Each structure stands twice: as C-alpha cells, then as structure tokens.
Image (cartoon, rainbow, N blue to C red):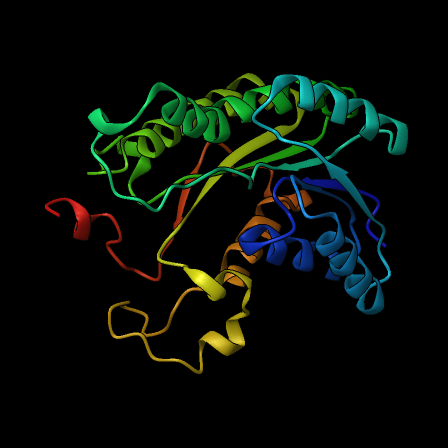
Length: 257
C-alpha cells in the first residue's frame, strides 16, 4: 500500500473520477471531495471498494467558498495527519458561449472563484503540513496555450481565471521548491463527455481524424500524467505547463468563431 494521502477536488465525476481510479490502483489513501449528490458518491465509493483495497475518505464541500475550505480542512485533519498530494480538479465551466460584456458580476465571480481563488483558498490551508514533511505535490488544470495567456473568444472568464492560475502555479513552484513541494499544471485537449471517465484501451479502438494521434483523448490519459508528476522521482519537474492534447491545436480552431 502507498503511504501517501492524495486529495482530489471534484473527484466524483469526469477527469476527477478517473484520477481517483488511477490513484486507487496504486494504493494511495484518497480524500474524495465533492459538492453534491451524496447517494451517488456513496455508490461510487462502494464500487471502488469492491475493486481496490485502498482507503477512500469523502469530504463534501464547495472549494470556491473560503469558509467551506476551512471547515473541510478541519475535517481532513481529524481523519489524516497530512495531505501529500493536492489535485485541484474542481472548477466550473459554462458551456454557453457569451461575450464578456454579457456576463453579470455574479457569473464572472462564479467562474473566477471556482477556477482560480479556490486553489488559493485550499492550498494555503494544506501546504503547511507539506512543509513539515518537506514533501508535496500540487496539480492544477489549465487549457491549450494557457501559458501564453491567449484570448479565448466567448470564454473570457474561464480563460482569465486559468491564465491567472498558470502564473499562480508557477509562483507556488518557485516559492515552495526549497520545501520539497512541486507544482505543475496539466492542460487537457478535447476530452469531452463520457470520454472523461473512459480508459486509454477503449480510446485506441476509436478513430478520431481531427486529432493527429488518430484517437480521442480519455480521462486516463490525464490521470496517468498526473500520477507520473506525483511520483517520488518526478521532483525535478516543477512549474511546468503540460498539454495533453494528442497533438491537436485545440484553441486555434476557436480564435475566429
């Protein structure tokens, strides 16, 4: 069994769900954060328990609310001594295409809080324990080309939040390097719908002519990259923005839409 504890926000669905699966295979103790649907999460944990022998702890709460993060931190310290790996998967994405001028302040703050501020709220509470152990891994999520802060038409709030998060991730990597803590960002390509919870072997059975590697991306593609970045010997990789796109120019296609 792996003796490290990993917290995955938004771990009940999508790429977060597939990441829980990957870390369960490797025997990590997992803290699965979710925001709603208790019954669904109970069924998910029950299913995982039938296939893996690791410990999974569920923590309900909204990471975009600082008071919720503080409450969750208290719950976490009542259950484990430290969190070694923090995966900031949760983050709202509004599918509706709209100009920045059409956002209300409430809508804008919802996106920015969920994708940028939440990483600050939670990280500041958990990093001190990592410092004590002189070891930690932090993973954030971005989008194609985010490191160059490109404009993304009709996605202004999300793009602004993630571009800020890319800079924040790099800042964490510099400030915490001497504490043995790394921070990296992974950027999914067009991994959509049910593919977020599918595996690589299934993806290889499907042809995707729009992706240079010839197949769709899957949640497992992301989960395995994250797992690699969190390994003991991956300590030289920090402050990196890593695209996982199958070679596809994901953002380029939307510049003029």
